Length: 140
Image (cartoon, rainbow, N blue to C red):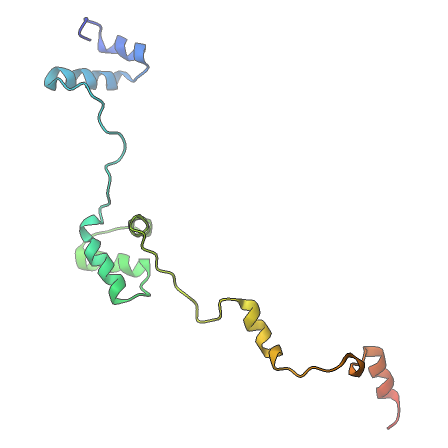
């Protein structure tokens, strides 16, 4: 640019968009800035200013759902946020709230419990279906 090359020609040479090259040249002429600026979305979350409120909701009620938090945030703070936004907010802080069902951890154990107290019989006393038919047909 300093050598008199146009922004369009420079854009083609370096493989960037024409509009991008024009913005860079304008910025260089106005402020002398030649360094690349940070790319991507700005860091942080729109929920950062409400961190104390959201964490307080969990302290007040451990089993609160993200949907309930979303509603409370809108009603009490006037901030609209989706479930995903809330989830990413808590994930970034390492906050996980797992809901546990009111049942044993292992379903197999709960299914086997009725059989734990069932009486056991020696194999010699067990009857096969054919033997049961014979016993039923014999007069007592």
